Length: 361
Image 1 (cartoon, rainbow, N blue to C red):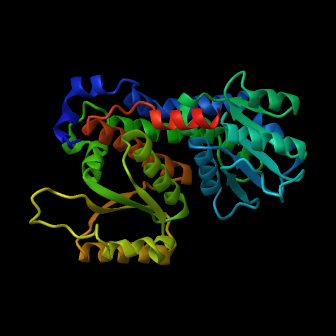
Image 2 (image 1 turned 180 degrees about the horizontal axis):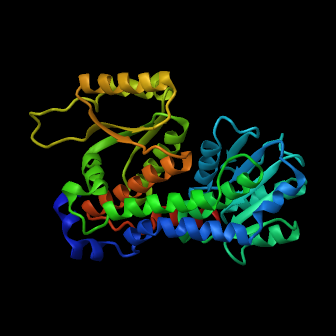
Image 3 (image 1 turned 90 degrees about the vertical axis):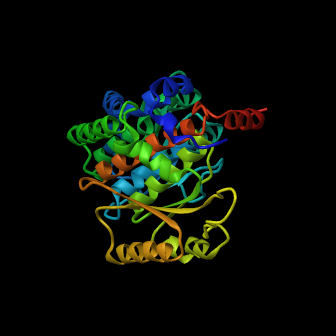
């Protein structure tokens, strides 16, 4: 497959190559935020606060539902008085018990298994999943709040109800005004990254072009941007079928940085055929620890000294959720454009569907 960036400005090509309407789906992120918050309020997720704060919060989820747990943890931040962890497995940790709150997100087999175990242990439960699902049935039996969220709602369909619940527990300042502000920022991202916007002024297409023909190492300069890095890497994997690594500073400076001296770091300008080489993509937070900021600056300089491509994306100032959402929104567009630029339909991935079907046999 050859990278064809000129196709990204061909409106007929974009429409024909995107059979599942992934560009429309990404553009609807603002609407997804509003819908998810309304659904959470209507489901009375705030009732979980009636028993006070839990000892710990455990989010059970796979894929984007699991990432919603990371969003919750990062947005609540270091000031949260309740530890938050995410389980992407069939097993609930042994320490989890009746004093803890389990937030089960999604309808995957792994999540249902963990949610059922949480119910057996007497844990408090909040569920976010599909209508008429096994998870909803479990929540009904436990008299637990249930928020309806289809897989088509993506990340925000899961993350917003969790954040709304956390706000009722006093763990984060996240009310209707915040979600509306986030939605408006995502509308701005959608306008700037719209398909009709030409590549030279479209940040989504520009980022896709920078990533193309490279092996991206995506680093977040904070806990918050680490989540954005994880999101972008998985979007590139799933949407564009493209390999990507992700990390978070300062940890990435203790291991991944060694790749700057590896076989993919050097560009051979005399090669008959261009070869893929590393690209360091840094997601820079507006609120960095001073030492993390120093590590970021030095890592960029180190990469440039070794001839490694470098790109940087700076988060806009604001509430942690606002900063995170705008970077995620840009990355989501870039992943779809990268897919289309390679002539790949960004529709749901058959390999993922096939693997899950075989596991379920």
